[in-house]
Length: 125
Image (tube, rainbow, N blue to C red; front, side, top):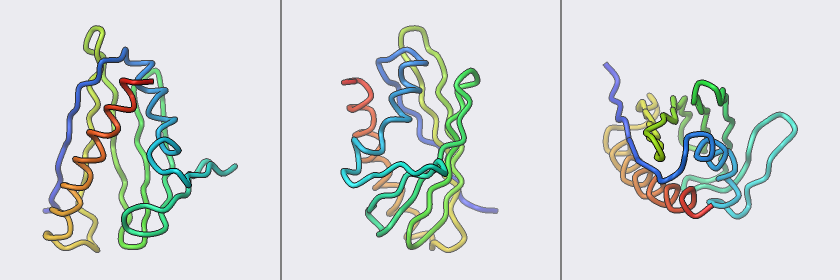
């Protein structure tokens, strides 16, 4: 059985606004992020050259995405769920086979910090 972790964060934004803000995060979080005609974002991440592509469905709150860097490939289920005037963002991270348990634990710490930064950006936009 593979390891996984689900991160949940509450943001002070209505669901549609939170959803739209997430789609606009790459250049706000990675200064060299560039969007390409094929739907991929490319940028330099903490583990080298990276790319990200969303597979979104706004009406269902789906922001699944694929993230690829020089060490690993991640298929990431992500949801934005309404909670009144707030939104819950749920991100499930399944350990890629190419990462050891120790590497996965380190990535979870890094991603936790990134999610806190993401929350600040979403709430300020």
